[in-house]
Image: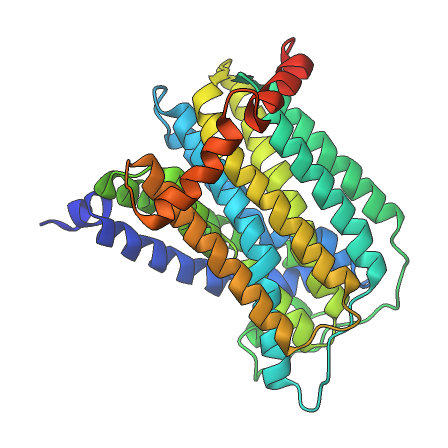
Length: 398
Protein backbone atom coordinates (compact mmCIF):
# COMPACT_ATOMS: atom_id res chain seq x y z
CA UNK A 1 0.00 0.00 0.00
CA UNK A 2 1.55 3.33 -1.05
CA UNK A 3 1.60 6.31 1.27
CA UNK A 4 -1.06 8.33 -0.63
CA UNK A 5 -3.47 5.42 -0.68
CA UNK A 6 -2.84 4.89 3.04
CA UNK A 7 -3.58 8.54 3.88
CA UNK A 8 -6.52 9.26 1.60
CA UNK A 9 -8.30 5.90 1.36
CA UNK A 10 -8.20 4.39 4.85
CA UNK A 11 -9.77 5.62 8.07
CA UNK A 12 -6.55 5.09 10.04
CA UNK A 13 -4.56 6.99 7.40
CA UNK A 14 -7.05 9.85 7.52
CA UNK A 15 -6.90 9.87 11.33
CA UNK A 16 -3.07 9.93 11.22
CA UNK A 17 -3.17 12.90 8.86
CA UNK A 18 -5.59 14.76 11.12
CA UNK A 19 -3.39 14.13 14.18
CA UNK A 20 -0.30 15.44 12.36
CA UNK A 21 -2.21 18.53 11.20
CA UNK A 22 -3.44 19.11 14.75
CA UNK A 23 0.15 19.10 16.00
CA UNK A 24 1.14 21.63 13.32
CA UNK A 25 -1.75 23.89 14.35
CA UNK A 26 -0.76 23.54 18.01
CA UNK A 27 2.86 24.51 17.28
CA UNK A 28 1.67 27.58 15.37
CA UNK A 29 -0.21 28.88 18.40
CA UNK A 30 2.93 30.29 20.03
CA UNK A 31 3.43 32.93 17.35
CA UNK A 32 -0.33 33.62 17.34
CA UNK A 33 -0.28 34.44 21.03
CA UNK A 34 2.81 36.65 20.80
CA UNK A 35 1.45 38.58 17.81
CA UNK A 36 -2.03 39.13 19.24
CA UNK A 37 -0.54 39.90 22.64
CA UNK A 38 1.52 42.76 21.24
CA UNK A 39 -1.12 44.06 18.81
CA UNK A 40 -3.72 44.08 21.59
CA UNK A 41 -1.48 45.54 24.30
CA UNK A 42 -3.66 48.66 24.68
CA UNK A 43 -7.00 46.83 24.78
CA UNK A 44 -8.94 46.38 28.00
CA UNK A 45 -9.24 42.94 29.56
CA UNK A 46 -12.05 40.96 27.93
CA UNK A 47 -12.11 43.06 24.74
CA UNK A 48 -8.81 41.63 23.47
CA UNK A 49 -10.11 38.14 24.12
CA UNK A 50 -13.33 38.82 22.23
CA UNK A 51 -11.61 40.44 19.25
CA UNK A 52 -7.94 39.77 18.42
CA UNK A 53 -7.60 36.48 20.30
CA UNK A 54 -10.96 35.22 19.04
CA UNK A 55 -10.23 36.16 15.42
CA UNK A 56 -6.68 34.81 15.49
CA UNK A 57 -7.53 31.56 17.22
CA UNK A 58 -10.53 30.90 14.94
CA UNK A 59 -8.53 30.99 11.72
CA UNK A 60 -8.56 27.13 11.54
CA UNK A 61 -12.37 27.05 11.50
CA UNK A 62 -12.50 29.66 8.75
CA UNK A 63 -9.90 27.86 6.63
CA UNK A 64 -11.58 24.45 6.99
CA UNK A 65 -14.77 26.03 5.61
CA UNK A 66 -12.76 27.45 2.70
CA UNK A 67 -11.24 24.08 1.84
CA UNK A 68 -14.50 22.15 2.25
CA UNK A 69 -16.05 24.48 -0.35
CA UNK A 70 -13.05 24.53 -2.70
CA UNK A 71 -12.51 20.77 -2.64
CA UNK A 72 -16.23 19.90 -3.01
CA UNK A 73 -17.57 18.53 -6.25
CA UNK A 74 -20.79 20.09 -7.54
CA UNK A 75 -22.75 16.94 -6.65
CA UNK A 76 -21.46 16.94 -3.07
CA UNK A 77 -21.52 20.69 -2.44
CA UNK A 78 -24.48 20.60 -0.03
CA UNK A 79 -23.00 17.60 1.83
CA UNK A 80 -19.59 19.23 2.22
CA UNK A 81 -21.11 22.57 3.23
CA UNK A 82 -23.03 20.67 5.92
CA UNK A 83 -19.73 19.07 7.00
CA UNK A 84 -18.08 22.48 7.31
CA UNK A 85 -21.06 23.69 9.36
CA UNK A 86 -20.69 20.57 11.48
CA UNK A 87 -17.03 21.43 12.08
CA UNK A 88 -17.88 24.99 13.11
CA UNK A 89 -20.78 23.83 15.28
CA UNK A 90 -18.69 21.12 16.93
CA UNK A 91 -15.91 23.64 17.52
CA UNK A 92 -18.37 25.99 19.22
CA UNK A 93 -19.57 23.15 21.45
CA UNK A 94 -15.96 22.15 22.22
CA UNK A 95 -15.18 25.77 23.08
CA UNK A 96 -18.24 26.07 25.32
CA UNK A 97 -17.68 22.88 27.29
CA UNK A 98 -14.24 21.30 26.87
CA UNK A 99 -12.10 24.45 26.95
CA UNK A 100 -13.64 25.87 30.17
CA UNK A 101 -13.28 22.40 31.70
CA UNK A 102 -9.58 22.30 30.74
CA UNK A 103 -9.02 25.91 31.81
CA UNK A 104 -10.58 25.43 35.26
CA UNK A 105 -8.77 22.13 35.76
CA UNK A 106 -5.41 23.58 34.70
CA UNK A 107 -5.75 26.61 36.96
CA UNK A 108 -6.57 24.47 40.01
CA UNK A 109 -3.70 22.11 39.18
CA UNK A 110 -1.05 24.79 38.63
CA UNK A 111 -2.00 27.83 40.74
CA UNK A 112 -1.29 27.22 44.44
CA UNK A 113 -3.95 27.92 47.07
CA UNK A 114 -6.60 29.12 44.60
CA UNK A 115 -10.13 28.62 45.93
CA UNK A 116 -12.20 29.53 42.87
CA UNK A 117 -12.20 31.43 39.59
CA UNK A 118 -14.32 34.55 39.37
CA UNK A 119 -15.54 35.76 35.96
CA UNK A 120 -16.93 39.20 35.17
CA UNK A 121 -20.72 39.04 34.73
CA UNK A 122 -20.41 41.88 32.21
CA UNK A 123 -18.26 39.75 29.89
CA UNK A 124 -20.65 36.79 30.17
CA UNK A 125 -23.72 38.94 29.53
CA UNK A 126 -22.25 40.93 26.62
CA UNK A 127 -20.72 38.05 24.66
CA UNK A 128 -23.23 35.45 25.84
CA UNK A 129 -26.26 37.35 24.50
CA UNK A 130 -24.53 37.95 21.16
CA UNK A 131 -23.64 34.24 20.97
CA UNK A 132 -27.23 33.16 21.63
CA UNK A 133 -28.42 35.58 18.93
CA UNK A 134 -25.84 34.18 16.47
CA UNK A 135 -27.02 30.63 17.13
CA UNK A 136 -30.68 31.56 16.64
CA UNK A 137 -29.67 33.15 13.32
CA UNK A 138 -27.82 29.93 12.42
CA UNK A 139 -30.84 27.77 13.23
CA UNK A 140 -33.19 29.89 11.13
CA UNK A 141 -31.09 30.75 8.06
CA UNK A 142 -29.78 27.21 7.54
CA UNK A 143 -33.36 25.96 7.40
CA UNK A 144 -33.78 27.67 3.99
CA UNK A 145 -34.56 25.63 0.90
CA UNK A 146 -31.64 27.23 -0.93
CA UNK A 147 -28.39 28.72 0.40
CA UNK A 148 -27.13 31.78 -1.52
CA UNK A 149 -24.35 34.30 -1.03
CA UNK A 150 -26.85 36.52 0.79
CA UNK A 151 -26.95 33.99 3.63
CA UNK A 152 -23.20 34.38 3.98
CA UNK A 153 -23.44 38.17 3.99
CA UNK A 154 -26.12 38.03 6.70
CA UNK A 155 -23.78 36.07 8.98
CA UNK A 156 -20.90 38.41 8.17
CA UNK A 157 -22.96 41.51 8.91
CA UNK A 158 -23.94 40.06 12.28
CA UNK A 159 -20.29 39.71 13.27
CA UNK A 160 -19.50 43.25 12.16
CA UNK A 161 -22.27 44.53 14.44
CA UNK A 162 -20.86 42.47 17.32
CA UNK A 163 -17.30 43.65 16.65
CA UNK A 164 -18.37 47.30 16.42
CA UNK A 165 -20.21 47.04 19.74
CA UNK A 166 -17.21 45.35 21.36
CA UNK A 167 -14.75 47.97 20.13
CA UNK A 168 -17.02 50.83 21.21
CA UNK A 169 -17.17 49.33 24.69
CA UNK A 170 -13.39 49.12 24.83
CA UNK A 171 -11.76 51.18 27.56
CA UNK A 172 -8.15 51.99 26.97
CA UNK A 173 -6.00 50.27 29.55
CA UNK A 174 -2.43 50.89 30.58
CA UNK A 175 0.22 50.38 27.97
CA UNK A 176 2.52 47.51 28.68
CA UNK A 177 5.34 45.79 26.88
CA UNK A 178 5.53 42.02 27.01
CA UNK A 179 8.88 40.76 28.25
CA UNK A 180 10.68 37.84 26.66
CA UNK A 181 10.79 34.73 28.80
CA UNK A 182 13.19 32.15 27.49
CA UNK A 183 11.69 29.50 29.78
CA UNK A 184 8.55 29.45 27.64
CA UNK A 185 8.20 27.93 24.20
CA UNK A 186 7.22 31.30 22.78
CA UNK A 187 10.36 33.06 24.12
CA UNK A 188 12.00 33.07 20.71
CA UNK A 189 8.95 34.78 19.18
CA UNK A 190 8.92 37.44 21.90
CA UNK A 191 12.62 38.02 21.34
CA UNK A 192 11.96 38.45 17.62
CA UNK A 193 9.14 40.98 18.19
CA UNK A 194 11.00 42.98 20.86
CA UNK A 195 14.55 42.88 19.47
CA UNK A 196 14.41 46.59 18.53
CA UNK A 197 11.94 49.37 19.30
CA UNK A 198 11.46 50.08 15.62
CA UNK A 199 9.27 47.73 13.58
CA UNK A 200 7.66 45.80 16.44
CA UNK A 201 4.18 46.17 15.01
CA UNK A 202 5.34 45.07 11.55
CA UNK A 203 7.10 42.01 12.98
CA UNK A 204 3.96 41.12 14.95
CA UNK A 205 1.89 41.18 11.76
CA UNK A 206 4.51 39.05 9.98
CA UNK A 207 4.21 36.46 12.75
CA UNK A 208 0.43 36.48 12.46
CA UNK A 209 0.47 36.11 8.66
CA UNK A 210 3.18 33.43 8.73
CA UNK A 211 1.24 31.38 11.27
CA UNK A 212 -1.92 31.71 9.17
CA UNK A 213 -0.17 30.29 6.10
CA UNK A 214 1.15 27.30 8.05
CA UNK A 215 -2.28 26.66 9.56
CA UNK A 216 -3.88 26.94 6.11
CA UNK A 217 -1.84 23.97 4.90
CA UNK A 218 -2.75 22.04 8.06
CA UNK A 219 -6.47 22.80 7.61
CA UNK A 220 -6.39 21.46 4.05
CA UNK A 221 -5.01 18.26 5.56
CA UNK A 222 -7.80 18.18 8.15
CA UNK A 223 -10.44 18.36 5.41
CA UNK A 224 -8.83 15.56 3.39
CA UNK A 225 -8.40 13.44 6.51
CA UNK A 226 -12.07 13.95 7.39
CA UNK A 227 -13.17 12.82 3.93
CA UNK A 228 -10.87 9.78 4.06
CA UNK A 229 -12.40 8.65 7.36
CA UNK A 230 -15.99 9.23 6.25
CA UNK A 231 -15.49 7.47 2.90
CA UNK A 232 -13.75 4.50 4.53
CA UNK A 233 -16.37 4.05 7.24
CA UNK A 234 -19.34 4.94 5.05
CA UNK A 235 -20.63 7.74 7.28
CA UNK A 236 -21.57 11.34 6.58
CA UNK A 237 -18.47 13.62 6.88
CA UNK A 238 -20.65 15.94 8.95
CA UNK A 239 -20.25 13.65 11.98
CA UNK A 240 -16.48 13.25 11.54
CA UNK A 241 -16.14 17.03 11.35
CA UNK A 242 -18.49 17.47 14.33
CA UNK A 243 -16.01 15.71 16.65
CA UNK A 244 -12.55 15.43 15.08
CA UNK A 245 -12.22 18.62 13.02
CA UNK A 246 -13.95 20.51 15.83
CA UNK A 247 -11.35 19.39 18.38
CA UNK A 248 -8.38 19.86 16.04
CA UNK A 249 -9.40 23.35 14.92
CA UNK A 250 -10.00 24.40 18.54
CA UNK A 251 -6.37 23.85 19.54
CA UNK A 252 -5.48 27.60 19.29
CA UNK A 253 -8.55 28.54 21.39
CA UNK A 254 -7.56 25.98 24.00
CA UNK A 255 -3.94 27.08 24.27
CA UNK A 256 -4.69 30.81 24.34
CA UNK A 257 -7.50 30.42 26.90
CA UNK A 258 -5.38 28.24 29.21
CA UNK A 259 -2.44 30.64 29.04
CA UNK A 260 -4.67 33.64 29.72
CA UNK A 261 -6.21 31.87 32.73
CA UNK A 262 -2.83 30.81 34.15
CA UNK A 263 -1.79 34.48 34.03
CA UNK A 264 -4.93 35.39 35.97
CA UNK A 265 -6.68 36.95 32.94
CA UNK A 266 -9.91 35.01 33.50
CA UNK A 267 -12.09 37.54 31.66
CA UNK A 268 -9.85 37.34 28.58
CA UNK A 269 -9.96 33.55 28.78
CA UNK A 270 -13.76 33.37 28.76
CA UNK A 271 -14.18 36.25 26.31
CA UNK A 272 -11.90 34.43 23.87
CA UNK A 273 -14.10 31.34 24.12
CA UNK A 274 -17.39 33.21 23.59
CA UNK A 275 -15.93 35.57 20.97
CA UNK A 276 -14.45 32.62 19.06
CA UNK A 277 -17.84 30.91 18.99
CA UNK A 278 -19.46 34.03 17.54
CA UNK A 279 -16.66 34.22 14.97
CA UNK A 280 -17.02 30.51 14.11
CA UNK A 281 -20.76 30.80 13.51
CA UNK A 282 -20.69 34.10 11.61
CA UNK A 283 -17.37 34.83 9.88
CA UNK A 284 -15.83 31.34 9.65
CA UNK A 285 -19.01 30.12 7.98
CA UNK A 286 -20.47 33.27 6.47
CA UNK A 287 -17.56 35.00 4.75
CA UNK A 288 -16.19 32.00 2.78
CA UNK A 289 -19.74 30.99 1.86
CA UNK A 290 -20.63 34.50 0.66
CA UNK A 291 -17.48 34.88 -1.47
CA UNK A 292 -17.59 31.34 -2.87
CA UNK A 293 -21.22 31.51 -3.98
CA UNK A 294 -20.85 35.09 -5.24
CA UNK A 295 -17.88 34.32 -7.48
CA UNK A 296 -19.16 30.93 -8.69
CA UNK A 297 -22.72 32.19 -9.21
CA UNK A 298 -24.14 29.09 -7.53
CA UNK A 299 -26.86 28.50 -5.01
CA UNK A 300 -27.06 25.34 -2.95
CA UNK A 301 -30.18 23.19 -2.68
CA UNK A 302 -30.08 22.62 1.07
CA UNK A 303 -33.40 21.01 2.01
CA UNK A 304 -32.06 17.54 2.81
CA UNK A 305 -28.68 18.63 4.19
CA UNK A 306 -30.35 21.31 6.30
CA UNK A 307 -32.77 18.77 7.75
CA UNK A 308 -29.82 16.56 8.71
CA UNK A 309 -28.31 19.51 10.58
CA UNK A 310 -31.37 20.74 12.47
CA UNK A 311 -30.73 18.59 15.56
CA UNK A 312 -27.06 19.63 15.73
CA UNK A 313 -28.02 23.31 15.62
CA UNK A 314 -30.62 22.84 18.36
CA UNK A 315 -28.11 20.90 20.49
CA UNK A 316 -25.63 23.77 20.08
CA UNK A 317 -28.17 26.28 21.40
CA UNK A 318 -29.08 24.02 24.34
CA UNK A 319 -25.39 23.56 25.25
CA UNK A 320 -24.78 27.31 25.05
CA UNK A 321 -27.73 28.13 27.30
CA UNK A 322 -26.57 25.57 29.88
CA UNK A 323 -22.92 26.69 29.93
CA UNK A 324 -23.71 30.42 29.99
CA UNK A 325 -26.14 29.72 32.83
CA UNK A 326 -23.38 27.90 34.73
CA UNK A 327 -20.91 30.76 34.22
CA UNK A 328 -23.39 33.53 35.00
CA UNK A 329 -25.11 32.10 38.07
CA UNK A 330 -21.97 30.66 39.69
CA UNK A 331 -20.32 33.11 42.07
CA UNK A 332 -16.98 31.40 41.42
CA UNK A 333 -16.01 28.41 39.27
CA UNK A 334 -14.78 25.47 41.36
CA UNK A 335 -13.48 21.94 40.82
CA UNK A 336 -17.00 20.52 40.69
CA UNK A 337 -17.61 22.55 37.52
CA UNK A 338 -14.88 20.50 35.81
CA UNK A 339 -16.91 17.35 36.50
CA UNK A 340 -20.19 18.95 35.39
CA UNK A 341 -18.69 20.18 32.11
CA UNK A 342 -16.98 16.83 31.52
CA UNK A 343 -20.28 14.96 31.87
CA UNK A 344 -21.97 17.45 29.53
CA UNK A 345 -19.32 16.96 26.84
CA UNK A 346 -19.50 13.18 27.19
CA UNK A 347 -23.26 13.34 26.61
CA UNK A 348 -22.66 15.39 23.46
CA UNK A 349 -20.06 12.92 22.12
CA UNK A 350 -22.40 9.99 22.74
CA UNK A 351 -25.23 11.86 21.00
CA UNK A 352 -23.01 12.62 17.97
CA UNK A 353 -22.01 8.95 17.70
CA UNK A 354 -25.64 7.89 18.03
CA UNK A 355 -26.76 10.36 15.34
CA UNK A 356 -24.04 9.09 12.96
CA UNK A 357 -25.16 5.50 13.59
CA UNK A 358 -28.82 6.44 13.13
CA UNK A 359 -28.18 7.77 9.62
CA UNK A 360 -26.35 4.54 8.68
CA UNK A 361 -29.42 2.49 9.70
CA UNK A 362 -27.97 1.09 12.93
CA UNK A 363 -30.35 -0.06 15.66
CA UNK A 364 -27.96 0.36 18.58
CA UNK A 365 -29.11 2.01 21.81
CA UNK A 366 -27.25 5.22 20.97
CA UNK A 367 -28.73 5.28 17.46
CA UNK A 368 -32.27 4.75 18.75
CA UNK A 369 -31.86 7.44 21.42
CA UNK A 370 -30.47 10.04 19.00
CA UNK A 371 -32.96 8.93 16.36
CA UNK A 372 -35.90 9.63 18.68
CA UNK A 373 -34.76 13.25 19.09
CA UNK A 374 -34.08 13.65 15.36
CA UNK A 375 -37.49 12.22 14.38
CA UNK A 376 -39.20 14.47 16.93
CA UNK A 377 -37.61 17.56 15.34
CA UNK A 378 -38.30 16.43 11.76
CA UNK A 379 -41.87 15.18 12.19
CA UNK A 380 -44.62 16.84 10.11
CA UNK A 381 -45.64 20.04 11.83
CA UNK A 382 -42.56 19.84 14.08
CA UNK A 383 -39.80 22.34 14.79
CA UNK A 384 -37.87 21.52 11.63
CA UNK A 385 -40.82 22.24 9.37
CA UNK A 386 -41.67 25.40 11.31
CA UNK A 387 -38.09 26.67 10.93
CA UNK A 388 -38.21 26.02 7.19
CA UNK A 389 -41.35 28.13 6.86
CA UNK A 390 -39.76 31.01 8.77
CA UNK A 391 -36.49 30.80 6.82
CA UNK A 392 -38.16 30.61 3.42
CA UNK A 393 -40.40 33.55 4.29
CA UNK A 394 -37.38 35.79 4.90
CA UNK A 395 -34.98 34.34 2.30
CA UNK A 396 -37.21 33.40 -0.65
CA UNK A 397 -36.19 36.56 -2.52
CA UNK A 398 -32.49 35.96 -1.96
